[in-house]
Image 1 (cartoon, rainbow, N blue to C red):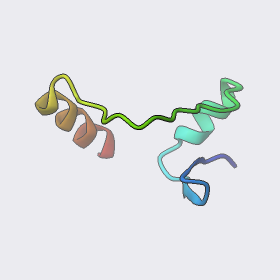
Image 2: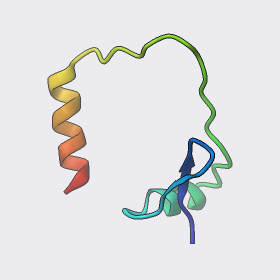
Image 3: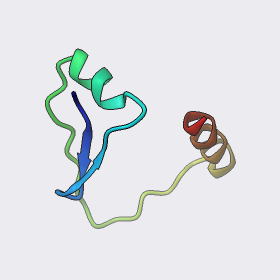
Image 4: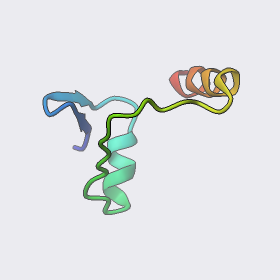
Length: 54
């Protein structure tokens, strides 16, 4: 069993992404900062998010 944990207490265990990361022996991804992340192409990003949710 594997899941992606964020904000220290939220777990996203559905969809298999955690299992994929585990199979690749990925231990952690860490990002921090105070600046806003701007999406270069918001329309394309939203389309891909919707596609990933299906």
